[in-house]
Image 1 (cartoon, rainbow, N blue to C red):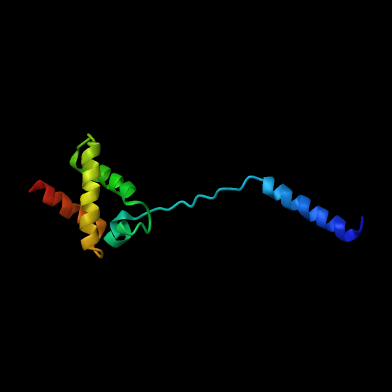
Image 2 (spheres, helix red, strand yellow):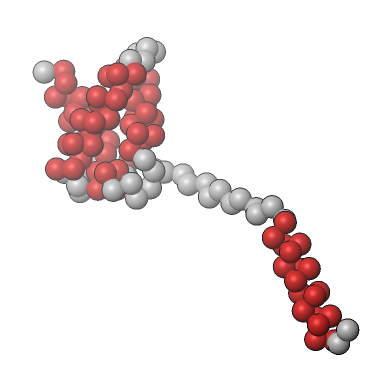
Length: 107
């Protein structure tokens, strides 16, 4: 064999070996400061899905109020209300929007 064919064979074997190597999965860890999160970011999925953030917010506000029960249907409805409210108030902080939605629910 000529040296160029040997070189090509070696490169093919190396490429094949890398193809068999499992790809390393990199998961970026993102920490959110919810007190600085805007409605625009929530609605635009720029950081995390609104459902995940709504679940966290629900737990946060339930904990503040001493409520330890979870109504899954109410959680979904509250998340929809928050997204609707945030769609109209993009620059508002999400924590303020939650307070407004919760206050509207109490009326």
